[in-house]
Length: 527
Image 1 (cartoon, rainbow, N blue to C red):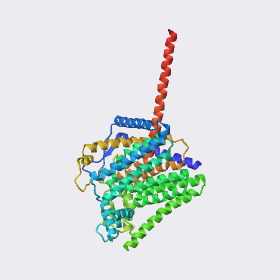
Image 2: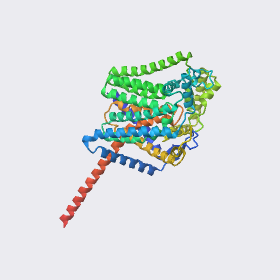
Image 3: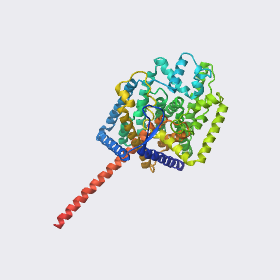
Image 4: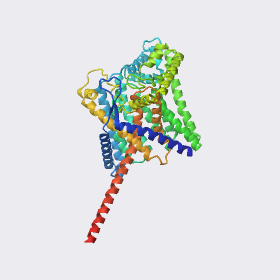
């Protein structure tokens, strides 16, 4: 038990440091992209009093709404279900409308994955080989799981039907919101926090705008949140069915998007600490099962495509290349993509993994020597890399989806480069600060409370994402899954804040009444 307590305190301290930095940075600055949409993040200052006033007003408004919904104790659950249903309907309606209105088409990596899936359906597996022009899956075999998912969608709804994938993303966004609601109910018994979560989720526009992105963001996040929900159910209530569902969902999330491995690692860490702290065997078995299902799923996926294609799947570009690129100045900000991967693996080494790895090691050493010679430059480099990813309130939701296949209407055009764009990015900026503050407060208020380490699994995941993306290639869109994972914790923290503020206000008002009455009586006695 002492180990569990020490682990909980350690995670809380690390979380407070991270979210203290995030909240502090977001209050004073913000990252934005110009509407010409080169992938270059710019930073600008925020008006601190305005941000604080907006956050305070939003918290007050949520408190009022929650008070109205929860005022009748006998109808609380019914009203919560109604609110949940309304929010889910809103998410489905808005995202479906956005698919029709935005008319986005897949480009870049999206187009390459879709082209690979179309080729697989037609029996063309050249993307897995070095002989094709693009060689996309030969270079990036970790995209095979996403390609398999898109191939399934194309098989069901027609080859090349990327809009079907976008509509499935709409369903995925609604499932994300629902899973987050279930997670909130497992993290706290405060019903006001449930209302806060649903209100926050209904305003999570970065998630909603990403439904047009024909890539792994929404599907992997859907399965990640489902896995987190099942994991908490398993840890708090038991039941091997919850564990089985967690294993399946987590494996799917990792196969679709390899960054989801951070969540898997968080699950395993929690279980292993539990084994050592409580000396129980079951968590060890559960962690082994989580790893086995993922590794087994990956092996099956690769085996199926090797048998179908008759080709051995290449290991792809060495992962060290991404680390080396993450230590270089990109075209936009430090650590952002600068073409290094293709230049090294495709160009310089001619797909020789050993030679490519050796060059990556050399370039990493060169970068480290430069950082050691100029520590101030290193500090500026990683500070800018951190803020360019984590302080972007849009998480590139417009920058990544601005290419359209046909003419848009005036509303969608305004959302991408007009007055609605300005209004929406301003709203997202205030919203982001509110969420960061909420998570910080949740960690602060709960620091000394007795709780299971599983309650910290989302904090561990977010902190793991922070460490990973400080080493890896940088992009704002990589942070979106972690931001959505913050909403349950933010709701709980903001609920505690408003409850304490309301209690303090009532105490002050009561004290004022007593003081006024006492003065009145004193005055009467003197007369």
